[in-house]
Length: 457
Image 1 (spheres, rainbow, N blue to C red):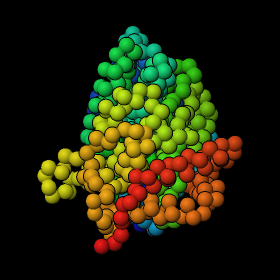
Image 2: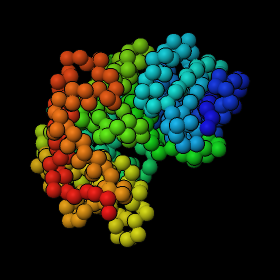
Image 3: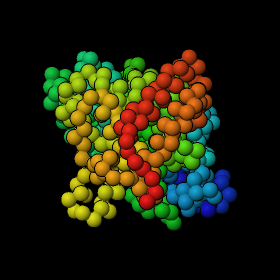
Image 4: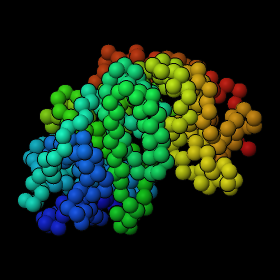
């Protein structure tokens, strides 16, 4: 149980001594410049993709992406079990070289509170000048600008982002899709869904930036990997801001996420930790927008579905027939890789487990949206047998059933439940709408689970 300090480096010339401020911290240095002098770990590839479109972001936008990548390295490569006294709350310090260290240090309190809320850890953020050899990380492009999108849209390969992109294209917008991935499953579904969109809206300009930003095992010595991934959306948002900054002007970054999962009210008192993410929570989104504003970046994160359930998104999709045909190619499962442990070889091809929280919400939303669910699930039929709550396949089902029961027995508790994941103080006029989407989302899952028997066996 010890704190960690991660020091981002920009090549061999970046040799300034950095002393950790956390007592007894394990220090890890990560060189973000590869042997060719380019930014490493996927950041250089993202810049190359923008450059190919004739787009160049500012140094501030690149510094934000570098900070986010360092945070991602810490979040995914420092084990909560090994590093935290309570097996959850880690103490993490990051030190990042930036073009304007005084500006970034001034924003440190805002970023610390943002990351503390997002990941549930205790963050310390420090900034120092870039080495003189790396005063500029953005190089002037030699390519003619060929892309003129009017907005940016996050595109994860999930059902919500697929609907969000469909709605934008159907409305005549020309979004720049931005994807972040690390594993092969996410990459596969992003590419499949993007190809479907490109074919369906063939008359529209189509641009897609896909960044594989991540870190191999062993980057942080003496630490196991961490699979809760609470900080991943900070990287995703930073990449979107990077693209929006390169486009120039006032750019809206659309974050397509149903309002129920954005709130993500815990199903039971034990789910406030790793099982209750805050990746698009209104408080977090507001802090990110405040950060972008104070950095002078003219982009703003907007979730157009913050008052809709996933089922309502599916039902109201601007091209319902197209969604019906290809919803099966989106990925929702929280950990599709676990299917590799299934003994039956033929079942290993089914990437959705069918019983985790995201899978259950997905199944409920397609039912509510009037879409025949052709998704292959490992647990295909929820009604054919008693689902064992002593095993993974039954735990989330039982949690949903208990949450539905508590809300129906005491409907007025929704007034208080919506505040449990985090503050809604930025949106005092929207409390009624958040209550409605919370109740409606839970009822969608209740309809899916009607008649399902879940108990210990």
